[in-house]
Amino acid sequence: MHRTPEYDAVIVGGGFFGASLASHLAQDRGLRVVLFEQADALLERASYANQARVHNGYHYPRSLLTALRCRINFPHFVDEFSDCIFDDFEKTYAIARTFSKVTAEQFRTFCQRIGAPLSPAPPAVKRLFDADRIEEVFTAREICFDAVRLRDRMITRLDDAAVTVELGAEVLAVRESAPREIEVTWRRAGEERRTTTATVFNCTYSRLNRLLVGSGLTPLRLKHELTEMPLVEVPPELANRGVTVMCGPYFSLMPFPPRGLHTLSHVRYTPHCAWNDGPDEPWLDPDVVLRERPRHSHFPHMVRDAARYMPAIAECKQVDSIWEVKTVLPRSEVDDSRPVLYKADRGLPGLTSVLGAKIDNIYDVMEVAAGALDRFVA
Image (cartoon, rainbow, N blue to C red; front, side, top):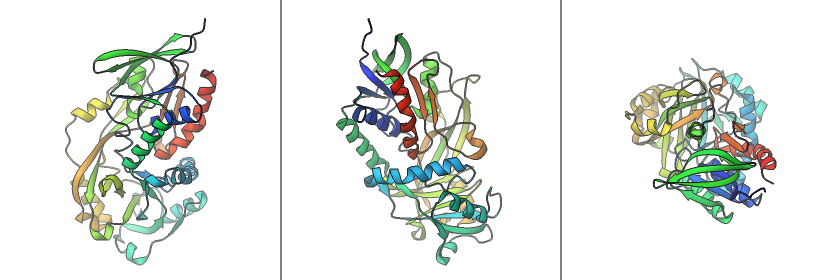
């Protein structure tokens, strides 16, 4: 006799992707959903500890597909989360003369191809840059999101959708316990518990392989970086400005709405160390690296290098730093693409692992999630 699992779907990971997927499945699909989050609050890891940029395509001149997906998803995000966005600043893109992987003309042509608004920066903005090192400066259309407002919005959505949320709950393993049924083993306050479901969505970002390894399944090929983004006070001339110098070993300065500061990121100095996961690599817990590796800020190196291109950055004052583990697909290193990782039935029917590199990837995830549900939820 076929028995009915406790839930139609288990979501592991309470970041933006996990919370969005959980609320969608419960509200729009009418499913019984439980969301497990290891921390004591939602959307406080990678969903908070990032540059808060909502991409509009400009960042990916070497990956046309990624740029086009940004252009498609950008207006959806702006419309759906209008109360969570911050656009009270002017966004500037500057193309370096040396070591850049694109020229100013190539960047201009690229933006025309993807339909991204771009115009020459006014003279007052161009004068902020060192003309010997910067070929051209453009004004673009880009926004940030407020991670605190977004968290509050998602908590309300989960409540309205009647999603069961288990905080302080670490999912340890999954296994097939009956046809069309998965047993989920989880732990809270030292006590192990078990829940049954038809499907599991692994949305744990840097810890995707933690669940796979714990379940005796083959881990995914992933690259991890321990990253630092200094939070800085900027001089008056940069107060209402976001800046990206590209495309190579350069930097971005972006508003960070929750703190009323800016983040400074640098291609060379933001990563402090890197390592790989995979079937032929030992698994290293990213949380252990984040917690135990000594933290020596790279801010002096970042600001010194960035000031060569934009002298006013030398006046930035570091207030704090955001530390997190960034996870990408190894193949993304070739062309800087940011595809969604979506691995269904990896060693276990009904188990799907999801990795999105950008917040707007959520719309791509929603498109492909329907297939897994239709196959495993009666």
